[in-house]
Amino acid sequence: MGINLVYAAVEAGFGVFSNSLALISDALHNLGDAAGLGLAWAAAWLASRAPNARHTFGWRRATQLSPLLNALLLVGFSGALLWEALSRVASPPKVPGEIVMWVAGLGIAVNLGTAALFHRGQHTDLNKRGAYLHLLADAAVSVAAVIAGFGIWWRGWEWLDPATAVAVAVIIGIGSWGLLKASFLQAMDAVPEGIDKAEVERFLLGMSGAVAVHHVHIWSLGAEEIALTAHIVRDRVEGHDAFIDEASASLHRRFGINHATLQIELGKSCLHDEHDHAPHH
Image (cartoon, rainbow, N blue to C red; front, top):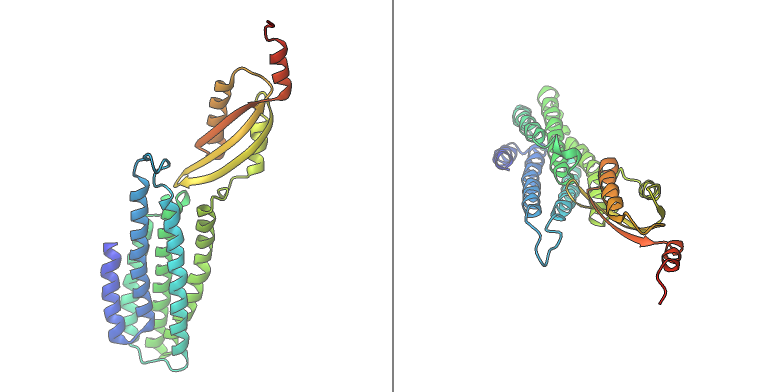
């Protein structure tokens, strides 16, 4: 956050001085990065709080709401940038290409360096993925600004400055759609990506004594934590504890489901058998 805030202030100053929309848009995006990182940081802190009598699951859902807000920031930024860039295409202002190149080049190093800090965790944590994609998007903005600065400096193509901003706005808007969709689905308790609900049901049905499976719900509790609840009908009255232990361990091992709550029910034939063997008075 500190790195991005300092760089955003420097870049915004040079952008205003040089009248470069490419630099100003990159600075605004860096400011958005700092806000996105702040959201991710706050969400991670909230998720670490222990459950209590009112919040029995704790605050883990914060790591689902953070990337949703992050994606909305990206989409909003791309729309505002596109609007301003299109208004400048017809009459682009004079921009010193050398300043644009050097300042934007520094931005590539800043954003790729900070994005690298989130690379490992972004595959399993949507909160970190939001921050990672936000930083990569800003690195792309900086690359585009360098190219625009070079074209202005070398050929005097002033139109490259707003044209680059248009292209960047479109790319960011398209790129953020995937994060927006994924975070929205997760916030709506959709089955996590990569898990087939029908396959999970078949797996449970294939376990010892299981004759039916119903009321199966699978959703994400937060970063790297997937919950499942299910009712399982068995044809026997014994061994339920061992069955639940084995099913829970197998669900974790095979599907990554690490918070399973299983309710055992007895089949009708099992209830009849138990009644037939009951003592008569």
